[in-house]
Length: 168
Image (cartoon, rainbow, N blue to C red; front, side, top):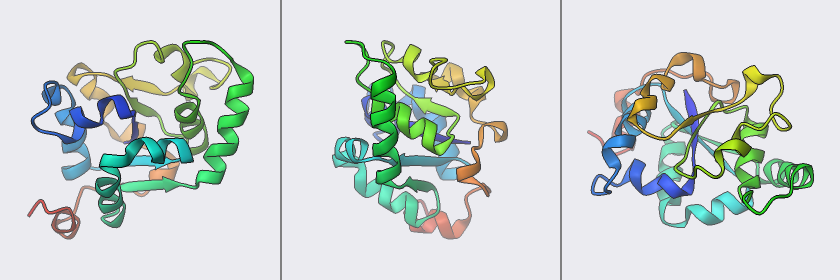
């Protein structure tokens, strides 16, 4: 499984001291110990990562993060922006990243963005619509069936990868 982490829940995923970390602990465990990978890219998203970019770069070095070319994501962001304009829709960059990468899961706590993450104009057929991880109740999404092609091959984290990540 590979996923995109919306910046509104980065601390919940990566910071053990965050109030809602337990809800997102399965995500980080899937990445650090399982077959999970994080997908990232696009100028706006990289700008939003600030504090966590070093973690993403370390994950990429360990083979646990997949970078999508900013030019591809940025061009798709413009296309997505032209498809729907609405006051509640300010995550065009995430929809663009979902579309370009083929990623099947997005972690987010932004309920107002959920309809756009799965909108039929962006994802057809319905089977291609991403799923939303918003709490540990969605832990069943962290499975092999949700591995996008861009993240393959996806194997369990090796000891060498864990060493690169400072886990051992």
